[in-house]
Image (tube, rainbow, N blue to C red; front, side, top):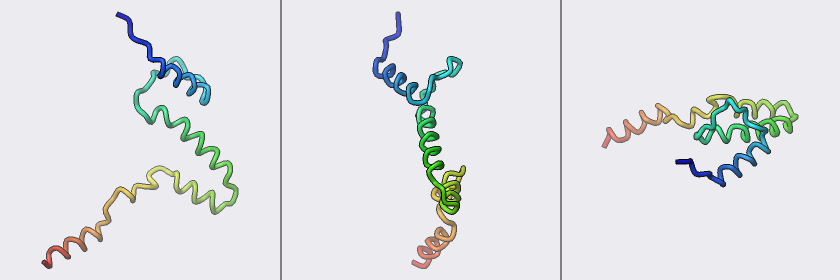
Length: 91
């Protein structure tokens, strides 16, 4: 029994390789979305970084794209937790 061909995937792979270059034959095709997105994201980042010329703006950009720069958005501040706990404890 042969595997069916997926024309959508084949056309997408061809356009992806046209945009980002051929994929090495040793690289297995990954089914994770980040694998397919990372080349486009890195390309966009390089274009933006090259267009920023002012030192202050470049510093802000590099700080924003540094690893873990948005981690604070995923945490609930402890001070707020304590305030909420006290507020409900008074009732």
